[in-house]
Length: 215
Image (tube, rainbow, N blue to C red; front, side, top):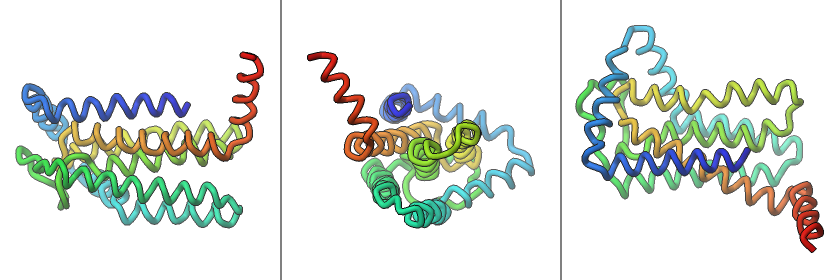
């Protein structure tokens, strides 16, 4: 599964960067933004504003702290360390890219929420992708099969909902969202591959078996 996440992340990041640097696709970015925002209603306005609060850095850190407390209580210190790497790395990479690219926020549509920093990539989309990917790879694997499938099904929709809401609120272009997803998916997937390689006995057993078969 981790390789599918990594592939999805690479595709998302590539599309986001390509749309950013291809002037011919800027019009598509604008059109998609206008198309999404034309469906604004009072209910959706309230819902997406709530999602903006739930998907920001403070809420992101709170959720990760809850994960951290659970891991420490269960003496899963390695996962706690990877949790810190996932969160700190994602925040650092996301905001470094914002300052490096320094893309202006969309001006075509009224912003329904106050936004901070540059537009590319979308930090909310990045946090949602990190949270979903970390839950999928590091948390769901420890759940009973019955609950694991439910968890995977629910958590898979969180990045989609968050990214769409950022465009709906008028504070991001679709390409910002794609890049945010891409960075989040790639970062956590790479960390999970490192975790598998260093700390998963099953991974080492499979590697040894492959070597024995080849020899």
